[in-house]
Image (cartoon, rainbow, N blue to C red; front, top):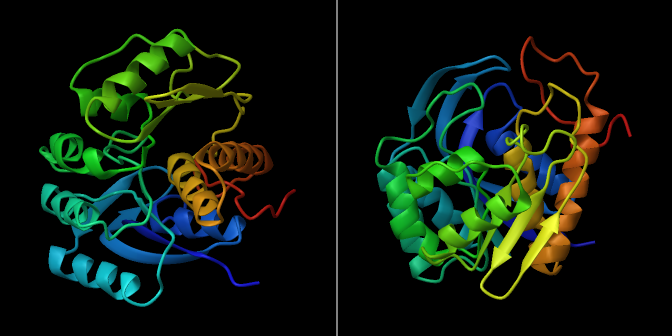
Amino acid sequence: MQPPVVLSIAGSDSGGGAGIQADIRAMNARKVFAATAITAVTAQNTTSVTGIELLSDSIVEAQIEAVLNDLTPRAVKTGMLGQASTVRLVSRFAAEHRFPFLVVDPVLVTTTGFSLMDSNGAGIIREELLPYCDLITPNIEEAQALLSREFEISSVADLVLIGNALLEYGPQAVLVKGGHAKQGFPTNSPDVLVTRDSTRVFDGPRVDSKNDHGTGCSLASAIAAGVALGESLEDSILAAKQLVTRAMQSSSSWKIGKGRGPLDMLGWNQ
């Protein structure tokens, strides 16, 4: 078997649960080869982020060019970009049609509340990157930051409203993740795909586990992997959601660290 290649442009997580490390595991779980362009090095574990070193745009650009010029990725996924200038760099590649299929996971803040993007980042993503992305995968908090407004979430219709609002900025599709809206969805965790032509709900059980570090990174990476494998966007999302749900269920008893632990993306307990 010759695996297709996906490029992840994201930050490194020293705790291994999220970021580039999670992206690689999710892509490998779908039997896709992961190439990377690292945007930042973070010092973090399961409880907190204690430091961030942003890499220069010149070395980020060099990494992207090196991969594009040799490995020919079939999809590109972005995670933590860290600063407005890096968002603009990635946007330029996208505007020049250098990316075959672009999945944007708009990583802005950690689950523990640590900011992973400078103050101008959300606006730059909205105005300069969204017009060129094929899919954006925000959770509720990220969507609210991108839209500069808050939403009361109590139904799937509220998620559709958010998706349609983000579509106005130019992406081809929006996958609004409902996992953070526990009050609105106490027993399930719906994600809603919104395009200009249709809406589809990808529902699933709410997994009772504190080991949920890297769920967003893993989902977006698995979706990009599915696209690289030649699946339709909807089939890629369905397979990715099922994979992440199984991984959360499988790692629910793990005690790796004192805080929010990682997922069993490689199926060690399955």
